[in-house]
Length: 140
Image (cartoon, rainbow, N blue to C red; front, top):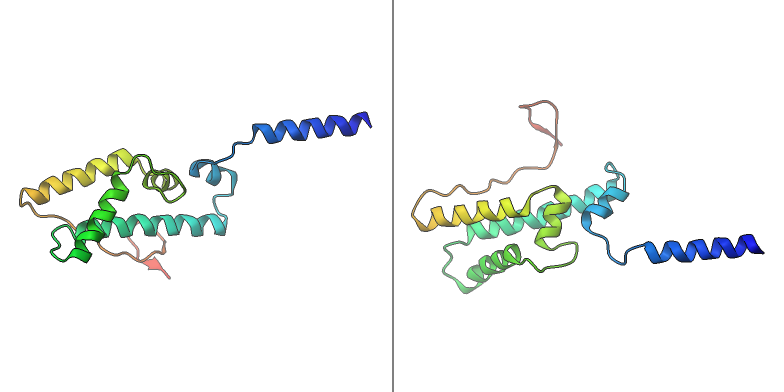
């Protein structure tokens, strides 16, 4: 009976020490890095980030209200420093190993170049695939 009480007390203590919310990095550290479910979530996070960057670049000089709205939504999402949840800009960057401050600085520099009339380099769509060697095509 005393052993059961000790186990109950230990499990209750363990529950108190478990955080209510996990940072994305904590979530990914717990799972195996080669876990297909983790890889799928990371691919989704990367797709969200790519879409926001593409909206910034494609609709930077948009004239229609719908396209301007897409630009401002992407810009607002990237600039938001208080966002929480697994799909907030900073959470996605952390999960993907991207320094969110440097990415924001790069976006800011690109916007300055664009406003000064300099050539802007747009993102190119790349297929997701495994590469075999340094300069080879992706395997599908």
